[in-house]
Image (cartoon, rainbow, N blue to C red; front, side, top):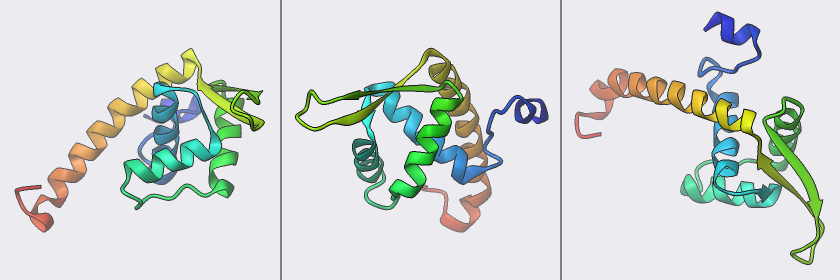
Length: 121
């Protein structure tokens, strides 16, 4: 994992930031989307418990684009000029790797939290 950090790969060791990356990449794996649409999908998927404010989302999108994980283009086809984001092939590879790591991370948390939340969870 230390080698991954040197390569700029974020691991679940930084849960909040890595989790936000994973959310955005997952949404863009399904379809291209603009910023507000991404915010709405995160809120919907989390039942309103996760909010992704613009001050967090747009720097995250700019960073992912600078890393070559997403691409963007302006489009006014919907009647409003919006910047649409799409997952690149490098982003798809990164998403696959991150998703696998997060599944392992979540499984570990479930085991560790089981005594606190009960067996049925």
